[in-house]
Image (cartoon, rainbow, N blue to C red; front, top):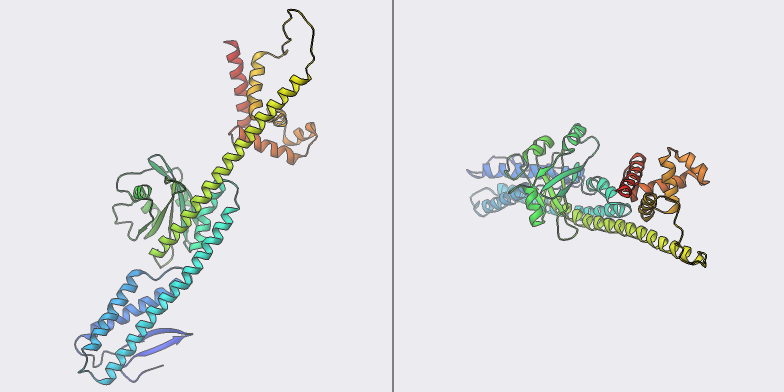
Length: 408
């Protein structure tokens, strides 16, 4: 649709208004600058609206505020334009209508995207709920955060005493070509929770943050800001109980749109629900450990009672009950192992200590290799070790320590 010469020119793609243009012919003294600024703000809003659709982001608050302020100035110019030609007044009215339409379109898009974001966050949390261990949750959470909220990078960190420690950095494919180098830099970093640091405030106040200019803000930790090259980011604490145990950080690296207040709020929703999932996983793991240990204790009590009931009664005078032929240190060492492991697990551990493979152990015990692997996995967990070698070393160390204790 085109206006007469010197008026507004509007083109449409689909149902979206594209690029109104206002002539400066006959606009008077003012108004040239105001109308030009309105057009610039309109185009900026339209551009960010397109970006928001493609990258699941949000039109920035600065662009909206500028468009709203200029809309007010345009209205003021209409109140004072009695001396202008009717055609010029009509052109300004059309421009005002276009600006109002753009602001309404942005608000409508926000409402629709908000519902979609909450649905995606819910779906990500459902997937996380299916994971079995706290470690699996930590590994998967940054990936699900990017998936739900449209971030290109997300990081989870833990709080340990007076330090925070980056743990897992997720980068969307193609968003950051230096992702591996950044992970390498973050690995092993321990950052002091110093006074006035933004992360320190998250620990104390337990609220999310939006950092629009991290390179110039004195509250940011500059080594990581420089290494990550982030121009804006959001952060939220993980607070499952009454203490902050970690953070999420996220940004839109590689996208033209910066993070917004809506991104901050979405991250907070995700972090709060993740904290509850993590607490649940920790409690389930602890209960499983206690149940296993209790089962072993009760099993030992039951075996002792069976032995007591089945023991032969002997008629003797002044004769001490016979003792086991095993040396005392062996009995004590075995009692420690027996308190942790089942009889079958002890057999597997002893064969492991002899150097047997899973296949050889399966042949000796006449079970499947899969069953042996399950026993080995439980042995590692109960002995708090990460591999077979450490399990054997722990077993031999325990036996040697008991032997030394028996000699003293």
